[in-house]
Image (cartoon, rainbow, N blue to C red; front, side):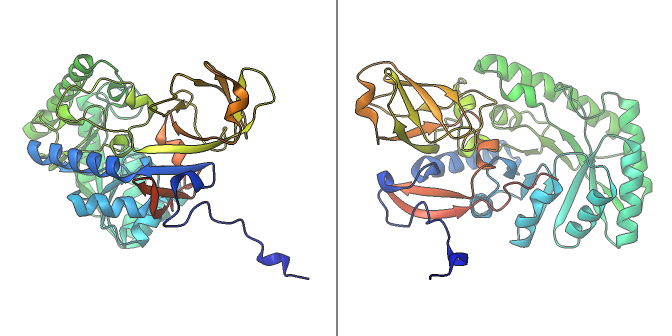
Length: 380
């Protein structure tokens, strides 16, 4: 009898495979569109004289982070400390955790990471500063700390000059910490669909953070880094004269949510991330069911949509179950779809990537590379 312990599911794809032969569900990356987006965002940052520190929470892949650094990025952002570990282990030199942290387990991770990479962290409470200073001193490391200021998102970050002053003073008094500047991210502005209104929201945020920078300057505290922004506002933030660094993440993929926004300026992204699916049932008239449901695609920013030049008006994804995606048939006979391979545009790339182990990269209809998603599931 064969050794059952050796049983493993076969790989979804191998280099050289035709795209239509890739097992589904699988995350696909169109490398021509990916390379276009990578180059355009780096050019945008370079033209504005700002550093590009892309957000790895969007892709969670070491292979992608290395391509971003090779194109000119100064480092990466992560949102969680555990998420940073695969990148640190792979030699990514500079990692900014664009989030607050609390708890002994988080402080221990921060100290460990700081021994291996140039690590920076965010705070919005003096108690966080004190705990971090004590942990860094006990661990024999020095950590760069950036107070987060609320520039309109209304989530984390202080919203007064007094609170900011207390944070900056507390950091300055701690020998184990280094004041790094300001974290100033307006998440809501990223998703304003109308280009002019998005520009106005970015300008308002830049005015707010500019006021904080001037306040600290008047107290003799320079801000070497003002970091923030995202895919939706990168073209405005890079030209603001306030931000020194931008943090876009989704720009590489352009998911369905961002793809529904207007792009009228210098940055013209293309869809590069797709989810392959196979029609597995046509038992009900007017309905087809595929194998990509909630365990394959995030739906917090809307259901995925069919990507096809010749059939986009034929099917509409209307419901996501655990293992099934349900389509309404808009034109034609549902029976004709059984076994068809579909390419879907996910509504939100970040949590969708978190559901998969690998990107299947293609050019001209053939698989040319496979990229692991090492940081998936790392949310501590």
